[in-house]
Length: 119
Figure 1 (cartoon, one colour):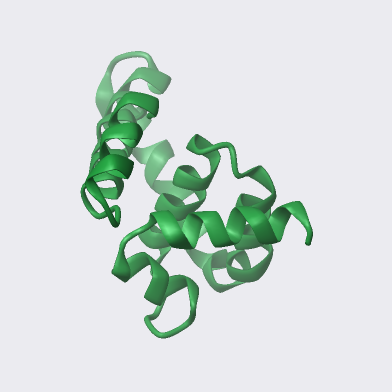
Figure 2: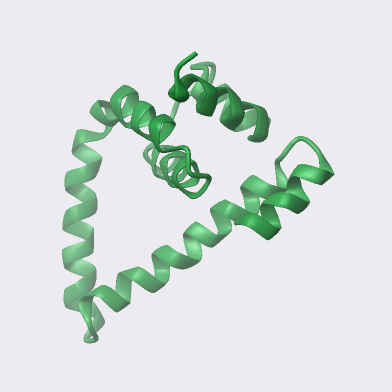
């Protein structure tokens, strides 16, 4: 079995129902789901699985990547502070919410406790 397969199975075991449905194709993946799932895979150290998500879904969001870049540039102009600081703080808060949600949606209490400590 490939490392990517092990990471995929582990991620699917650990994640909540909604994420399993998205990754199995039973629910449509949004751009935010794509960002969130690749970030969570990276946090867990599942880099091969993160690459699998990129390879499978990135092509769906080519236009979103361009819009995101435009929004970041616009946001930098409006902030009147260091460009990185304006968007990094917001992104950090959002990513923390993703981790907390992932932990809350885990299958069992022991896993949730471990995630809270690990992540």
